[in-house]
Length: 172
Image: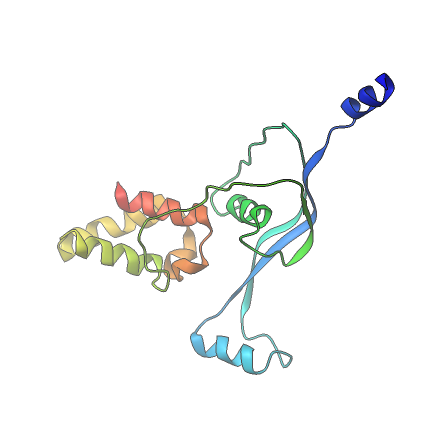
């Protein structure tokens, strides 16, 4: 009996395991391209692909505390959303033992269909900034957000970190 207990203590329990976990998003130039892809799925790709997460292997053991660290847009929130089941992986395996209680919601109030730029302009207009004030602040907001070309893409294509970074840039 003592040997069984000692053996159980020696082998930690894996609660989260990923092998080759990947997530890619289709980036469409227009709604028409999205419609073409739906109508003719086997013909050709009518979109570019953005790989948010590529071939992640991870093991988290029961009782272990893990920090996910990386640059803005590097896939941290995507990984957490995959583990929590709010996103479906493009490739790879994911095993989760037990129950997870994620806290991943951001409430910046942006319109997901608008680009980052359009959301900044809308927010500025709502708080009563003049066109001159908006023009003076727009570049610094875009630079601070640090989301590059995504500033001119629909917010719905952003990672949670990119979304939060834009919201913070607007707030300050």
